[in-house]
Image 1 (tube, rainbow, N blue to C red):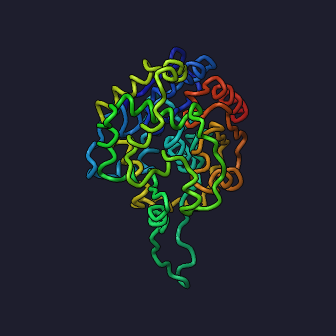
Image 2: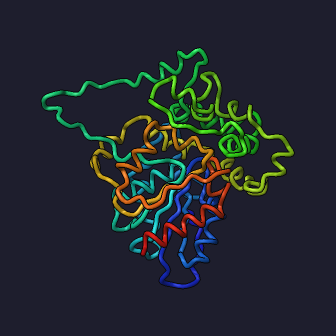
Image 3: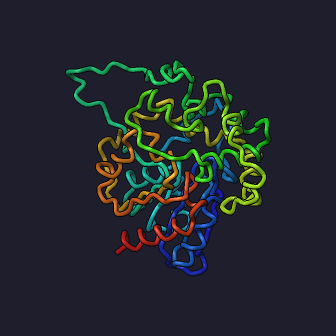
Length: 356
């Protein structure tokens, strides 16, 4: 595993583990790591399985999905912590898909991951195990929402199921506008820089409600993701004015994704949409996150609400000791890159409270 490290100069520091999301890298924590290290922490940020310079995973669409299931991603996180000589961490912090890995770390090994910060992707808790079926057998149900989305007057499809198709990797890796321009548009579209990001809670998991989501989440049925974000490409002046992701920093992502493609990260989506590993995760059915927890996101991040009711359930039921929940204005989905100073302040506040 390729790991970025900060605060290693003196021994005995408490450890903080940072887990990135899609389509990101350990590099996405570049504005957080120095601040945490200056505050006295040993900070570790790996390229997660399927990303960047971490090796030992298959880039093939048809490859084995088992290495990408959540229990194995938790094992990866545990392996990084142990490799650097820590028996536990002060906090595991995850963003986007990394938020789910961090949450599962807290569910499965609360003795090691003694507090958790989830960013941009609220956690719904472990899937429910079948209950009472001796008297009322379950009938397998196909989710009708995909058929309903396709039947809308403006036909749509959900991005996670698109990401699970064989074509998705090539659509982005070989985007007609070029990979660098694709990533620029993708990051812009989901940031606070895009004026259309004004999130609101959805009332239900149905086609009419999901259609309220921007096209980077609920796409036009006949468009690829590259075509979707190309419609919102910022102009040259906006790109030159961007301070949270200048071209020199975006080039790091471009180089790594040019080398690897996206399939490693897309396998995570395939694990989720296939349901192959739901039974394994039902082992922890009804378990809550009992260690100190926090949620941080951008106020302009639709990711908070893409699962109807999840944001609210996380606070009221899933996390029994949530001591901080903050939505940061002028930040979209890439909160720790768009508003790093505010994120760092909140992390310090949380760490001080959770370790008091």
